Length: 111
Length: 115
Image 1 (tube, each protein chain N blue to C red):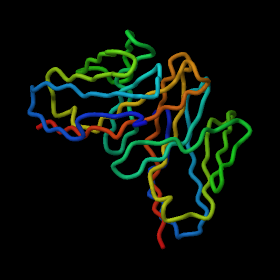
Image 2 (image 1 turned 90 degrees about the horizontal axis):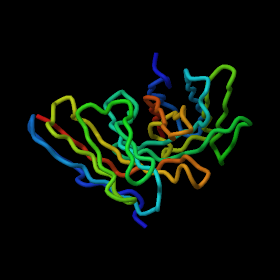
Image 3 (image 1 turned 180 degrees about the vertical axis):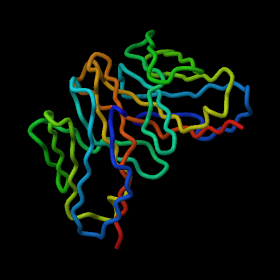
Image 4 (image 1 turned 90 degrees about the vertical axis):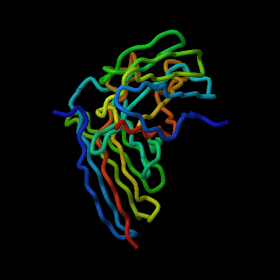
């Protein structure tokens, strides 16, 4: 079983739609959680950290459910520019800051 | 402020050749990392360095060596390249353990093909 699992997609949605991605992680001792965004043939960039209480950044909302070991990302009012691959990332070892990446979920927003 | 830079951007090697991928960061970060990314798979950690002079193995270290030359630079060496090492290689850095954050910042990547 992979340590961090995501639905690879692609998710094809029209502009203005709301879309949600989920991610599950296997290590219950995981401490930190993130969503990174990766554009085609580019490097990953931090989109947002995920906090236990849930957090929002504009059109993006991230939530963490420790009991069920899953993380979610909600994107409201999708834009064409949101088209990218979204990587779920978990820090399972705070001592060494070793991040474990999911395989990514590809989002395509169509006009 | 360039962030994390990597050279070269592209490289084609023949099986058995050696090469070194260079990475430098100008953010005064303590920790640096090397990852590889293969189609359909997440980034996998090859090696990391928590401080100058220290290095540790990650998930997939076989076939690679690293050097933390100074605080700014962290190089990855392939001594005898194999087709299985065809991949995109990303270098990253983080202020961890200081700075109160474990966010990692990535370089633009090196696309390596081994024939």
